[in-house]
Amino acid sequence: MRKTLGLGMTAACLLMAAGVTVASGSAGDRDRGIEVIHAERAVVSDVGLDLDHSGGTPPDTIGDQSVFSATFRINGRTIGFDGGVCTNVADPALFQCVATNSFDKGQVTAQGLLDFRQGKGPYHLAITGGTGAYRAARGQVDITIDTPDPQHDQVTFHIIR
Image (tube, one colour):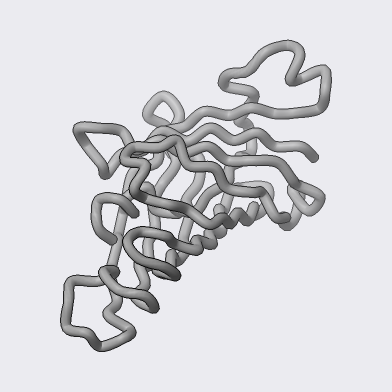
């Protein structure tokens, strides 16, 4: 993925891990049943696929994809990982992204239509479901590309279970 997709998901991304409690958020959020978790997302791999065979550097044209994975860390401790794909659906930088995030107690999915012309973001994804302890998960994920190092993003999960 080019820098604009370095947030990986980007997708795309959601988070809940065994033993991880609310890392940030207000008492009001907790009272409403919203768990807010703030984590660093470190890119592990990010591969561009030239699916339209234009010969350009993917994902530069409609149909090209970026396939990614990353780890989630809080205070230096790895609490989970993600994997997903972003597909270029309109020029110059509009992408449909889908990601699955895996943690000790289950998985959480997220997706969104993202315009990477926004620079570092924030970008917003919908939590679309999950498995295990997160089978009824919904909410939103906010991602900001951490400059100057686009390989480390800041991710905030607003999870309603």
